[in-house]
Length: 151
Ligand SMILES: [Zn+2]
Image (tube, rainbow, N blue to C red; front, top):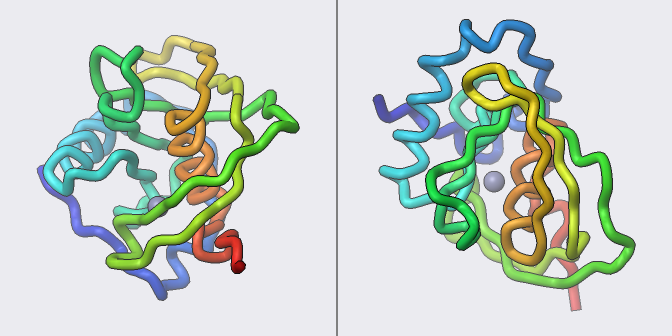
């Protein structure tokens, strides 16, 4: 089911999301998030963008060639981020028609729980790392427009 996208400005987007304790309780939300992301042609989506303050992000498989399917991360935690950064253009489903350059860590390591409750770790670099950092920011109530580099 395609969910309604919360658009900026809205205080919902500024509130910090809470950890998911019961993975079984969010199965429908996870499925709907993947569906919504695919239908909106988004590269990533966080639960807060559909009005749920839960720490869940969906990443489209096109974000990285290593992905065979869409990636769903519950309680994602970036536990390592490179000092080395790079600049790249970002946009957001919640902020239509706005794009800007944001500086992000080039390489990150992320710990998360998958939809079956399995704990997993992944490494991400470049664009893939950027998308994850953008989505995890959403879970902390942060938007990319507050990080745009002004020349
Ligand atoms: Zn976004």
